[in-house]
Image (cartoon, rainbow, N blue to C red; front, top):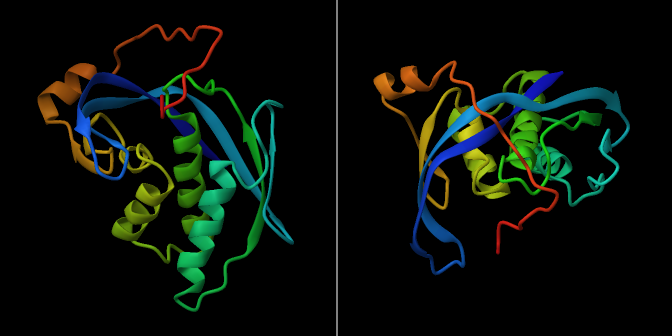
Length: 183
C-alpha cells in the first residue's frame, strides 16, 4: 500500500507555448496531506478497481499506464515483472488541478519498483514519470519544489522557504466542475 498525495500549486506562471503543444511554465508546488491510497495484490494480469465509479479503470488510467511503462522498461533489461491488481481509494478530486492522476501514476512506479527489488534508479523513474505526464516528476520528491519546462524539470525549494511552508494549513475547495489541463 502506498499514499499518493495531492499537490497545490502555490505559484504558477505560464511563460509561453512550446513547439510540442505544451506550455512552458514556472511553478512552486507543495504536496498535501490529502491524497489517494493505492494497494496492489499479485494477479495474472494488470487490472484496476477504484472507489470512485467516475474514474476510468481501463488502460486510459495513469495507474495502468504507469504499470505498463514500468514493466516495459524493466523487462527491456531482461527482468520479468509480476502483474498486479490495483485498488485505488480515490480522495483527490479529478479535474481540480491537484495532480491526483499524476500522483497515482508515480505511486504505481514507486510501488512496483519496491516490489521488484528497485531495478530502476531515481533517474530512470524520473524519465518514466516525465513520459507519463507533465506534473508526474514532482511526485518523486518529498516537500515543496520548483517546476520548470512543461513540469519535468524539478528542483527542491530552498530550505528556508520550504521550512516556512511545512505544516501550514490550507483550505482546498473544488467547485462542482472540472477544467481540462489542455484547456
